[in-house]
Image (cartoon, rainbow, N blue to C red; front, side):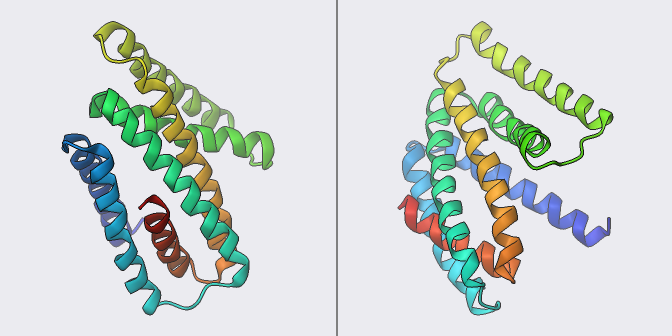
Amino acid sequence: MSLGIFLAVLGAAFLHALWNALIKLGTSKVGGMVILSIVEVPIGLTVVMFTDAIDRAAVPWVLAAGCTHFAYKFFLTYAYDRGDLSRVYPIARGAAPMIVALFGAAFLADAVTHQEYIAIAVLAAGILLMARGVFTSGEDRKLLPFAIGSACATATYTLIDGMGARVSGSPAAYVAWVFVADGTIFT
């Protein structure tokens, strides 16, 4: 992996963790998420102006992605209302790649090696340990269905975005239009 790609991935991870922390620390989780969604729209529209148009076949994928992003934000917002960032974030973000991997193996004929199944099992064990902590720490147990709902929505939009970006003809434009759809639907 080149240094540029590594820094881009690291930067994206930092920004993602930062906005999650800001949502959690805010007095109104829904209000913070609405502000984030409003900001997405002009960013998306700006990128759209500098990218190629997407293929019409990608439009249903953009709309589906916008709807699943809404579900993700809904579940995450209410999970943060009920639990700590250090509990919600690892469950919500850690379970999503596990769900995608298992769905891909079960329904998309993705080849999964023994080592990858071991990695999935280790990830699942970590998530279960994080979830188990809710029962021993006195936290609101209602955070769990919301955190898992967030993970399921993330897994769903990951699969949708994979398909949408492929048929779009311009992955950057696809992502920009998802920003617009997501921001518009949530607000």
